[in-house]
Image (cartoon, rainbow, N blue to C red; front, side, top):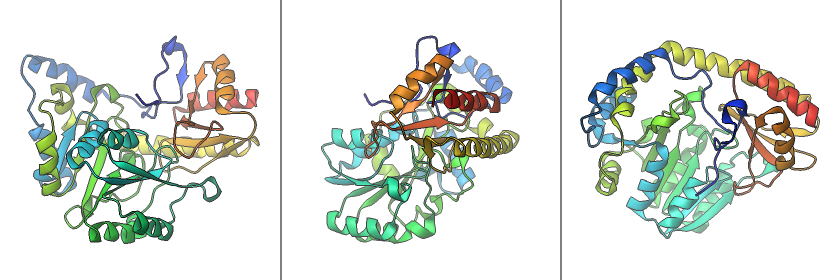
Length: 346
């Protein structure tokens, strides 16, 4: 199994876990009420493929329900895509979420890692990537957008030459937009009819329901049809399916979350700039990648644990070493505790 954030176990209730990238505003009362109400259907099988939720999502995205697939979290759909298409060659933009690598390795794909660099703030240079793709001619290109752990987002206009090339060579783009709800950026959903793109979305992070495992993917109907041919039935439980409309319709929660994120991101940027022994990278998401200039992230994490604060060391990401760590953006009170603790240990 790969390493991820959110694993801190012992004395969990006493520790501020900054490895978890979940909206700290938490589950709304409306969602809680809906889940309690749904207990009455626990004695019945859920929809075999989440048809009602697919229709809700399709209406929201202005696409056909045949262009949507529901998953037990976005991660299930990563493995499903790898299994359904079993590509010979895959290019993954690194550093990034490590489940892509594992999913395609399990299907026997040859994996080529295109590594972004610290010297360029881990930003993607499209022309350089195009040259690389022309040498490799992959069957699948994987991009996390915005990217985990760097927080970098590449806009449609910039990436369009790559998307066009992928179509020209008869390949696919797996585009993970799991964190896009935290941004003000435009999704690539409008391109699915014209281009061979499979877009992943997570509903658990922004809406703070990771325990329900709820994600979905969108693509043209032919891609979705092939995925469904390889998909297990009943992977989504009744509770997860019951809240899709409720969470999507809560515009007040959406606005409050956006305001929280902008305010706290500004606060953390301001404070981190004043800490000389840390580099950090501007993020479009609810987490920030940092680099410690002295020692390593494990030493820093051990020191921070004296203050009951846990951070995510990032040396398991391809292209990063043990000087990198990632912090989630939490409530203002918790963010103050983090900054004060970092200042004490550095």
